Amino acid sequence: MNVELLHHYGWKLHQTNADNLHDAAKAAVRESHEFLTDTNHTMDARERTTTWGGKELRYHSALVFRGEGAPAYSGPAPFETSYWFAVQYRAADGMSRGESNG
Image 1: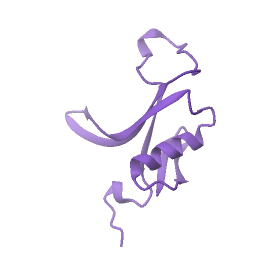
Image 2: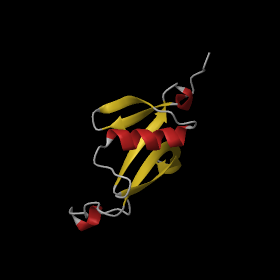
Image 3: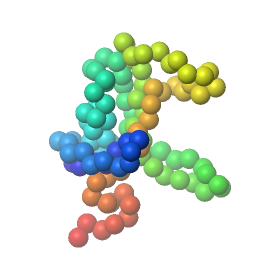
């Protein structure tokens, strides 16, 4: 399955062998972040919701958590999170944006 990840420079298409959107996102994040290893992280990719301006927003994101050998957080304490970094993703076929498939 193809998936698009939102990188610092914008959306980029990634081709994977995964059977579903969330597994495709995990594969694409791992492939596109060369510093990730089998042991230095775990990942949770799924649909999430947040409230912004009184409206509920739905989106997909992969949260990457530190594992063995990952660098320690070195930024300002108020900005530390429980996860290492996050990557937003969407289906590459447009289905997550409400477009039809045919």
